[in-house]
Length: 314
Image (cartoon, rainbow, N blue to C red; front, side, top):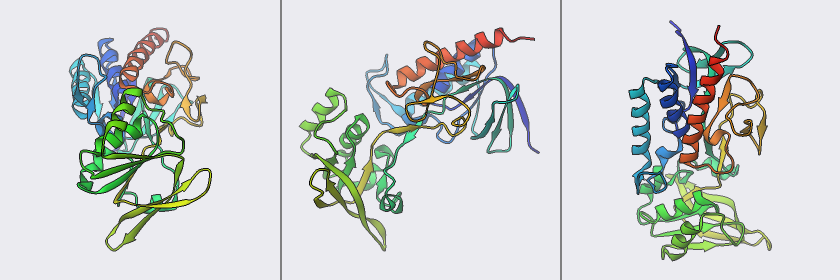
């Protein structure tokens, strides 16, 4: 039978923002429930070495998220492996429905649903997803031992993916539509020094070429952004690394958004346009998008929720 659970604070999402909110809300004796969502641990579970988490010179992303989960649980946060499929913000308490059939009611909600990889939207990209086209090098890189692969993009994500893929591939071609990268300088230095990586400037992916028996990628066709000339590059894998889009599906029609879908919060806080709904991490942050800033916002959201609830007792 479908169950209904009530909590003072419902945390939706389980990356650094969600788990940190869980730690702080638990310490405030709010007995929070955290629903992990479609990707428990968030984007860091698809990252290998994390070198910018304070206190750890180097830590594996999945290990860090397990530690955060354990910390939140130890503080008293109830962690549930469910996916919230709808959130009604028009009633009090707020009502969230889980994919499991459970209904969650909450006096305050902290949204920490993060962001997801963007795709180019090409039919050929869609056709070969999971058969040579990927957005996660750490998930799929080992399939390409000794193979030639391409990475599309020019930011931190693309450069990190390209560098990681050199552990497996015989050659990585980074394809970028401009002639300079947006990635951090230290990452660019590593990229340009790596003998396995070749950079192709002023090109965009036009088509993924493959075969169907067995299904797999054989090449990409790329187009010069100025001349329109098409070049075919043989490869077995295509990694699309063009950034992320906020996972705002639950609230895109009810909360104020900015910069293409990020949830707007009041300056210096995590308060959204609806009182009692708070947002933290990559869902609201289009600028920094770091694990440490997400964790900081998770702390802020829990403290903001605590103050909100204190002012609405009775």
